[in-house]
Length: 336
Image (tube, rainbow, N blue to C red; front, top):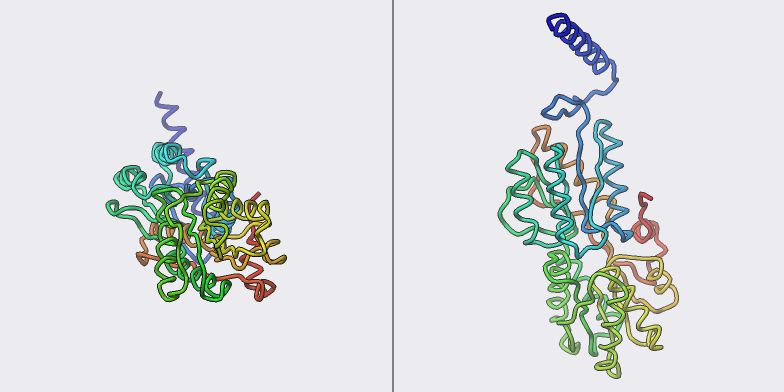
């Protein structure tokens, strides 16, 4: 037993010396971040609302870009398949706590449903950055990294007004209840339309759900009720907009009823080219993933962060969609 202990101690001593030499010769002017266990690599869990939409793949790409730039960070990318599966997202957070990751970047799909899980993480000494969609008050998070979704909603209202010449009946198609980001877009849109007295919102209480099929079915119903006098529809996220576009095309109304979308897809970009979509409010998901990881690691290293970090809001239109910056946001890079 004594020989075994002596061998382990000696091995540990030489390993420590070797590590010190390697760090000293690494050629990096900055001091590497370290976890509580002394490892040079930090394990950062990045947990999106869901993993099936292109938006989240771009967030993943940005997170990996930050990890590559930092050089000592491992991204653990995990989340529910669909954005309405709050229970699965809670389980992912809890599993990351159990695995004692060094930090968590989380896009809560329910602003209230994830509070306890985040509170547990913070209580276990694992800092949390919230991104994309906000969390109800309670846990002491590092920062909130996101689009100003309320502003994005107001931008959608302004683009709708332009598209329908500031008059006519419009529909706001809501997302699932409890998603803070889309609730902000919805409110921003309604508030923005107050500047246009000749625009009437004929429906603002219907939800498109978290997938294109459900959204199409809902818009099919709304067209039966309001379609004859309808001028425009605002769909507050990618799957809702894709379903709305399909419903309008099937009804033969895609050139007549103006669609304003939030977040791009190949179908929506094509729709802007053929006149079936009058504008897309854009976020910067790559920057969102990048800033979330960079902010979290800086906090782990003892730095401070602003309570809210905006990643910007933009509007793509048929007129500006070929501009370089807009093209980058319409087709952001993704992690396959």
